[in-house]
Length: 271
Image (cartoon, rainbow, N blue to C red):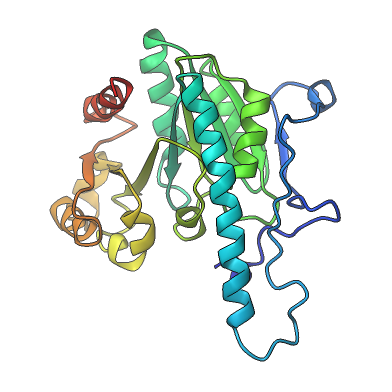
C-alpha cells in the first residue's frame, strides 16, 4: 500500500507531515485554531522496521493504520449524521473530470440547499479556486507527498469548513485509483469516476476501488465518437468486481446524463 509510494510521512507530533488545510482567498493565519479532535495519524509506514527480514511487520503495521483510520472515520460519520450532513467521496485517476463535474453539480444543486466541497490535492489551490468561483464554500487539503485523503484529514477539513446542517458535502479525493480505496473518510457514499479516454478495462486493472464504489460514473461521453471505449463493456467489467454497483454515463461538460447523477443524490437525501 502506501509503503510503496512513500505517502503519509509522520511528523514528530504524530501527525501527517506536509498536510495543509486552507480556505481559498483567506489568509491561513485567520483560521488557525485547535481542532476539537486532535488525532495522531500514525501513518508511519516502515519506520523502525528497516532491518526486519520479512514483510510480516509491514502487514501488521498496515492493519493498525487502517484500524485507527476506521475508528476516526466512524467518529466523522457520527458527526455528519448528527447534523444531517450527507457526504460523498469522489475518487478517480487524475484528469477524469471530477472538478468539472463538481462545478456543474454545485451550480445545478445550489437551489436545493447548502452545498460545500473539500478538495484534495498534493499541491496548489487550483481546483479549490475553481469551486470557489461557483460561490460554494470550499476547503483545500494539500497532502504533500500523500496520495490520498484519510479520516483525520477529513475531520480537520470539516472543522474548518463547518458545513451547514442538512447540507451536502462533496469530497474530491486526490487523483489516484489505489490508496483512496483503502481509507474510509466517514462519508455516506463512495463514487468512482472513469472517463472514456482511460479505457473500458480500468475496473479490471484497479478492482479494489471499483469494489468499494456505491456508484460508478462514466464521464466525458461527449468524446465517445473519437475514442475506443465501450460503455457496455466498462459497465460489465465494473459489475464483475462489484455486482450491485450502479453505473451512470454522463458528460459533465455538455450536461448530458447529469439528471441521473442528481437523481442518485436525491435518493440518498431521502434516506
